[in-house]
Length: 219
Image (cartoon, rainbow, N blue to C red; front, top):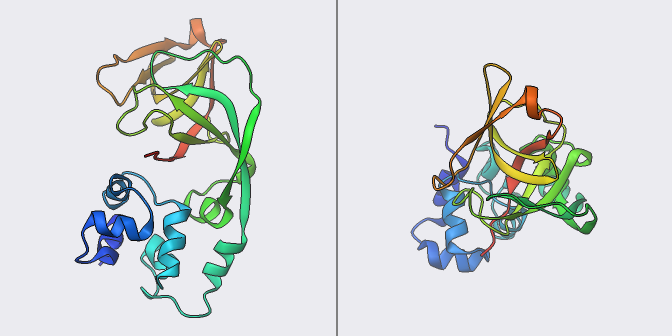
């Protein structure tokens, strides 16, 4: 029977309470709940903890293979030895009414596992950028101060969450193409009304940076 990552994490947790298990794997219980509900993919830190407990990471991510790892686990070796550093820019992506971008300097480089980027996110590390989120219009999906990973190779609007600019304002919202060369911009938080962009009139000011393919959860 095919299972989801969340269902496999619940299986791993077993009879342990979420609160107790979250302490063991060193993640907040709410973050663990997000993983178990498939609201977001598990991060590298959790996978490394599960590996240290003897779980087969390939099974955790795909459901394929044995549940428990062997002593010689080529996948785990690849995961532990393959690290790429992605740039976190000092411009914040507004998930609210907007945030003016004054500069685009790199604040720092953040390490990510290249295996997860290639095999789980299906992206090229060279195409990825990181931004911090400001505002609550995408809550509870993406919260203030979360870090979003943006795939700059995916600019075609086909529905989903994107990072984009309108003039000098960097934003993180749902985008959907509409007939008549229009784009609908909407938020997760229903307190923020959707609006549309007329590409004929605002096309020069509107630029898609890329699709958001991952975000962190800060606790």
